[in-house]
Image (cartoon, rainbow, N blue to C red; front, side):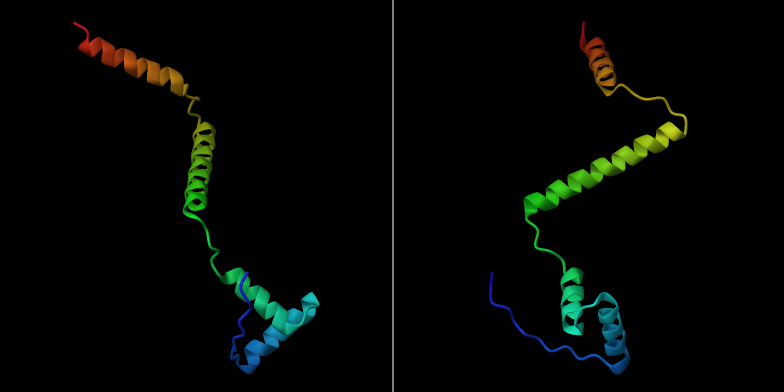
Amino acid sequence: MSAPTTILVHLDADEYDRLAAEAQRRGVPPDSLAHDLLRASLPTAESEAARIQRAGLDALDRLARLRADLRRAGYPPVDAAQRVRDGRDELDARFTP
């Protein structure tokens, strides 16, 4: 981990008052709250593998929601393996003399 760097942030009086009020509500000093808020708003460094994994998991979540929506709409469940077998059988029938 690298050494911390200090920066100066200029807030107008209203912004500082809101920061101080929220810090008091949370029971922390205003500078600690400012640090936490800034840190939370920055994107995290993410490896390419982690990004791809997250994108894949997000896609699976969307697929699960779509499946649930289809079931609620009354569509029957589909046996994907059987659909693939049927498709292969159809292709075999097309190209078998």
